[in-house]
Image (cartoon, rainbow, N blue to C red; front, side):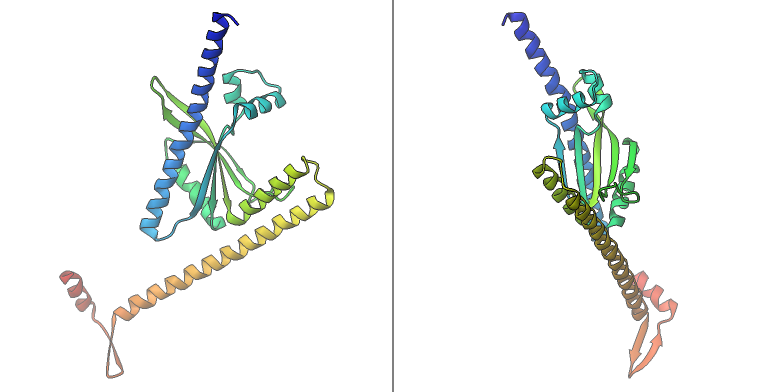
Length: 246
């Protein structure tokens, strides 16, 4: 191997490293934003809609395999155009409503560009898979330029994530050739997971209503005075006086 070949290999390695670093930085950027949303929501609402997050970056080998399957040109421009899941972030939520709440919070960040949305919750895949997928263009600042890098964000409930994880392991064990009977049972399991999500969502809403009723009862009780088993409604002027003293 001559000097020119060595130099070419070094340059190509540097290009690959810089290319993957862009996606790593984009993941770090959106993870930081999610952490801020988590902390803000917890502080203001005493509730966190996000259970946990997990990120991953495709390996060069995985990227190459995918570009070969797609029969695309082998170039960095082609890879950026045809492969949108090089950087991936999975967000696991407690309830279905939290999935759309988190999605809305991301959509409101004006410097994030939503490229595509696939709602597999409203329209599950044929195998029963459910999740909300967003393709998000994330701005990052390199030493010499600004880039917009695509990150795939998957938002699921705990039940959806549990099902998808086991389904992936089963497919891996059978090398993608899963018996038809197991496919049917997997879909039934996905439907059971969805039924659980729907039930927990209903319970979550009912508990929220109960908490709201208790809060209103407490406010109502604060405006009443009980003396010798006789109730008196505090006049508005008294309440304003207390507010002025506070």
